[in-house]
Each structure stands twice: as C-alpha cells, then as structure tokens.
Image (tube, rainbow, N blue to C red; front, side, top):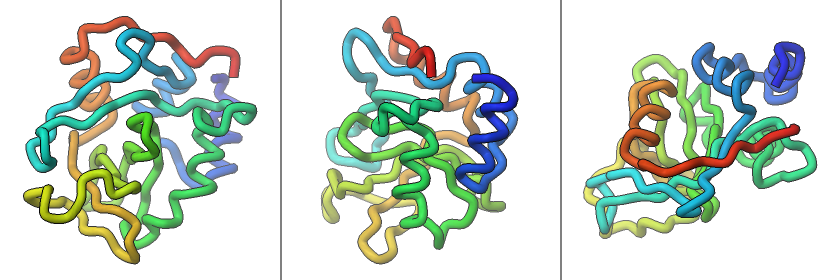
Length: 164
C-alpha cells in the first residue's frame, strides 16, 4: 500500500491509522495464514482457552472479506459506544480483531461479534456488549505486540494479501 492509498483509507473510514498499523499496511497490505489456514491465540477468558486468527485486512475493494475499508464501513458503527475503534482483521468466522485508541482502553481486542463464546461459557469480558453487538476481550496493548505475539506463537508460514 502506498502512502497516498493509506491517506485514502483514512479518509474512507474517517479515522487516523495508528503509526505502527499504517507502517504494517504500507509494508504488507494485510495478510492471511496459508498452512494451517488459521492461527490460534491463547485467551483464558473463553471456553477452550483459545481463539482463532485468520487474516489482517488490507486495501482490497474487490474482496470484501479482506477489505479494511469495506469491513469498517459496514460493521464498526456497532462499536460506536467504545469510541475510536478500527477493525484490523478477523478469525475466519466473522469475529473481528479491533484496534482501540480510546484513552483508558487502548489495545487490540477480540470482538465476539457472532456470539461464538456464549454467555456463561466465558468467565469475564473486558468490554461488555451493548445492543447485542458482542463482547470484547483484551488481547494486547498495541498492534506491534499483537503482531509479534501472533507470529512468535504460530510458527507457520503466511501468505500475503498482495496486489490490492
């Protein structure tokens, strides 16, 4: 992704991209796991203790499931009560990873948008849902930490979402 494309993305989603995330997009324009086709992240707060990770969104208007702009414009308003939120990827089943910049809540969170982790099966949530939008679970204090944790624990090759 070029600098001008990054500026266009910010304009299209009406948000300023955090520097570390913008640098990632300029380097890679998103990515997804090749083999296995998803990664796992430890999360003690859900039944089973793990959640899946499938992809980081990129600028990909022809592939809505990979498109940062498309996903944010379609769904992120469901989290308006949280403040400054940006969907950056998902688990492969419709549950996004979001980057929150709201003071006091900064970090990367797993958004259980599809209610995969039903009430009663989760022990705690970090940000409780409103209007049945799905609970949010804290994963990491920032994008770089999330990225490093994901790939240091995965030990797999990735394929890049290219040519967007």
